[in-house]
Image (cartoon, rainbow, N blue to C red):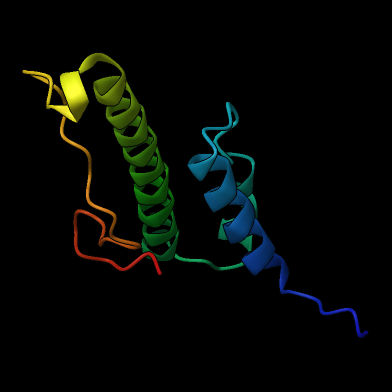
Amino acid sequence: MAHATLHPSIVSLVSLAANIAANHPGQGLCQLDKLKQFGVTEEQIDLVVEIARHIRDEAAQKLDAKFDEAFNACFSAKGAEVPGAIPVASAACCTPTLTGKSCC
């Protein structure tokens, strides 16, 4: 199997996005200077950051919804809704970012 290579700018963008989406303490900040040196524009970096944050936030919402669903089932009578409970989020696979950008 042939070993595929990626341009270093793509590797840096992926690393930046992964760090942000994973809530890594370093946030991928070490990639910013590299990306500037590769000629990646601020707008391109901003788009990657927006998508990564959206994926991170969407994952957290889905995890919270699963917890809330299990919590409600545990404490409600025959699965009835607990007053004031947080509703379970929709099961959509991919939703757009706040500015309408697609993450898939």
